[in-house]
Each structure stands twice: as C-alpha cells, then as structure tokens.
Image 1 (cartoon, rainbow, N blue to C red):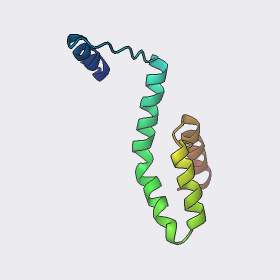
Image 2: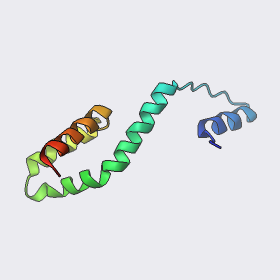
Image 3: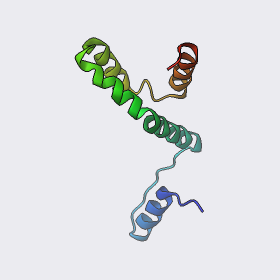
Image 4: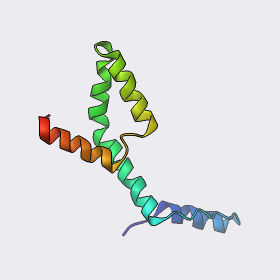
Length: 90
C-alpha cells in the first residue's frame, strides 16, 4: 500500500480548517522523483569528482556550477553519461 505524504498533509490541514490547494501534475511528480533518484544514485560519483579540486580547480569549478544549476539532474544528462561510459569505459 502506497501512502502519499501530500494527501496526509492535505487531510491534516483540512481537519485543522486550513486550505491547502497544491495540485501537482502527475507527470511533474514523476519527473521530480526521477531527479531525486538520479541525484542519489550519482551523488557518490560526483562527490569523488569534486575531490579533484586540488589538481584541477577550474574543471571542478565548472562542474560545481553545472551541478548547482541542475544541469545534471535530467534524464538527458544521465543518458549522455551512460553513452560516454559505454564509449570510453569507466
């Protein structure tokens, strides 16, 4: 059985007399879930890459900016990374 936390919050708010109208598109919710999974899965790899700051500071700065902008949090970025891993190996 799946319990949706947003339903619990909405129900508790309604019982307290507070209106919570946060309608989330199911497609958007799925995309957000995918982004969270990508972040969790590749966080360790990206963390190791960021430890290279001593030897390649400019490269690390660019990677950090891309991470903070959300550039790597897309399905397209994951597919490109997979393509490069297949092409060049890990």
